[in-house]
Length: 370
Image 1 (cartoon, one colour):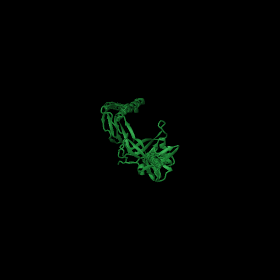
Image 2 (cartoon, one colour):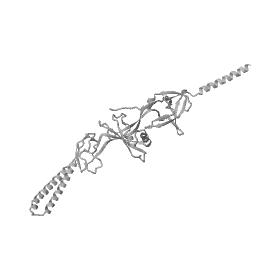
Image 3 (cartoon, helix red, strand yellow):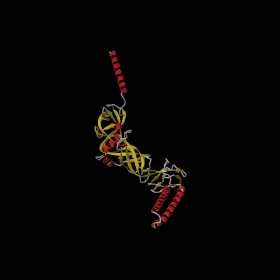
Image 4 (cartoon, one colour):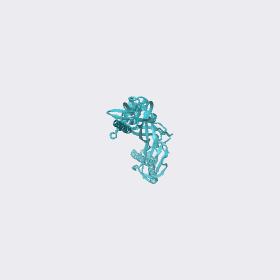
């Protein structure tokens, strides 16, 4: 009897030890961030890097040969149409003008002398006509020299901002000089140029109102411009054009947005980021990186009432920007979806949900500059 009791105790001790080993081997419950989704009205911002250019950027070049005698402006100065920018040396041209004017006067004297002689039939009309032709030729030469002198005073063709001044006083310039004297940029309005790929272009157009392509562009919401310092420009802009076809090398479409620039803050050659809003009503949004694609299906992981991970197939639509999906089917309000551990946590795993505010996931940060 004592032997049987001893054996029973030994068996119980073995089972007890095994139970402890199994208890120790059980995996710990890991924390993972989740969000409780909700239906909402929201605006999503798709962002595209852009370069800025004025309405016109005009290279200022000399039309005649000469040395720079005077520079009347400074780099970055605002100028008006017709304002004097440069003056070229005209000493030689002035001398030529005086000589040409003397020839005009002499030719005029000859015409005046021959007219009465022809009227009295003392000489033939041929001599007078020849004198008139000489007078016309002298006037033409004189006028050409005056135009040359006028071209030596170089004026701004538009209102705008003076660019760099690479040449200095005394520099010799001509119409063949490679480098322009400067560039005048009309920046009363600034264009932001950027590119979108084919998928982005389709997403933008499919969410836009209107029947025709041009009608959709006209009805697109105003866009934002984020400056290179991260601040939002005070003026809203509008998209005006998409290129007619995709670039064969990059597969992208060129887009132009227009921004008023009354305070002249924006400058040609600058950079920024154009934000295109998409307005959505009564929808569930989820981050694209919170989903998996399996066998042509889009999968979302949710934490059920027992905090077990469950895989749910969903039907989604991409929205411009490539960060979010609109969920058309598969999720309900207050479902808790995993936003980390995607592709790592397996279905059926018990987790410790760490709830993250849904609004912080779908609301972009915005800064403004006035």
